[in-house]
Image 1 (cartoon, rainbow, N blue to C red):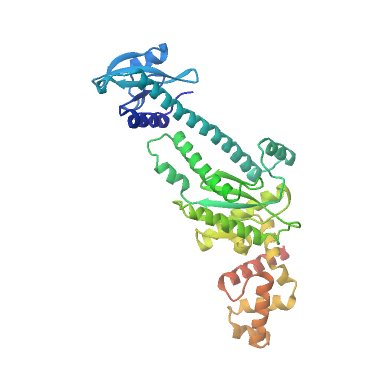
Image 2 (image 1 turned 90 degrees about the horizontal axis):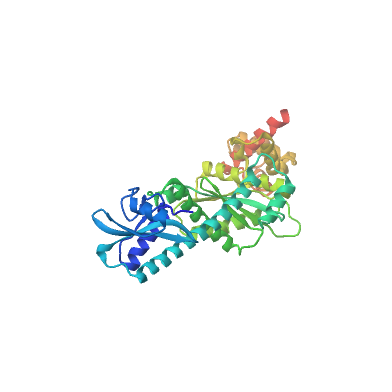
Length: 393
C-alpha cells in the first residue's frame, strides 16, 4: 500500500488549510508526490522511508524535516515540513498524522466500495453481453453478490454522452488510472441516485457498463406479465428515470433506450439488445435527449445491424394485427403506394374518402402507427417490405 499522487495532494492541501503550513509528501522511493516539484528525488526522504527515523536536510533552499508516515503499522509515505515557517511541535505532528490517517481511511474505504461496484458491473456486463451464459452459474454468482436476477425484469439503457470525457477534463493532472477512479466515483453517484429514486428495491439493479452507458435492470410488478402488457409500465419507469437524472442537472445530454420484457435470463439478455437498438436507432433517427422504447423505434431497426430473426420477430409483433385483416392490409398498401394521398388512394380502392379515413383510424388503433404520419408510414413501409422479403425467402 502506497499513496498515489491524487491522495498525496489531498493531504498536502488539507494540511495547508488546517496547519497553515506547507507540507511535502514523498513516496517510498524518495520522489516527491505533492507540495513540491513533481518526481523530484530527495535522498533524505528515502532514508526516512528505509530507516523509519526522522531526518533533516535542505530542500529547495529550505531546511526541511522528513519523517515516515505510518498507516496500519506500515510506512506508506514520507512527510516533509519546512522549518522556516515555525517549530515543529508534537501537537502539530500528531494533528498532521491524524489528519492524514482520516483522509487515507476514507480513500481506501471508498476504494473497497468501488471494488464491489466494479465486481457488480462486471457481473451485469457478463450476464447481458457474454456470447453464452450458464443460468445456474449466473444465479449462483448473483446469490453470492446478493443481487436479484430471479424476478421479472426488463432493461433500461442510459447513455450520458461525453460522461467519461467530462470527468477526465476535470482532473487533467491525474494519471489515467487515477482518472478512472474518478470516473468510478462519478458513476457510482449516478447509480446511487437512480437506486435511491426507486427505493433501493432488490429487483432494481443499476450498474455502469463503460463507454458512457449505464444499465438499469428494472423490476416489474403484476400477476400475469407479458411482453405486450408491460410496455406502459416500462415506459413510465424510464420516464421517471429520465426525470431523476434531469433533476440532477448533469453536464451531459441524457438518452434512454427501453427493452421489452421477456421471461428468464435469456429474455433479460434479449431485453438488453432491444434497449440497445432503441437507444442507437432512436438517437440516429430523432436525436439524443429523449426516451425511446423498442416498439416506438419499431421498424427503423431494419436499418440497424441486428439479426434477420430479430427484425422478423419485431415486424410480426408490430404488424401482425394489420396482416390478419386482409381489407385493412390492402387499404394501407394502396394508401402508401399513393404517396399518402387520401383522394388518390380512395379512387384506387373504389371507396369513399370517409371510408378510407375510417380504415386508417382503425389501423392506428390496431398497431399504434398512423399511416397518415410520415414517420409512422415509413415504419409500416419498412415492416411490410421486410415481411414480404421474409415470406419470399
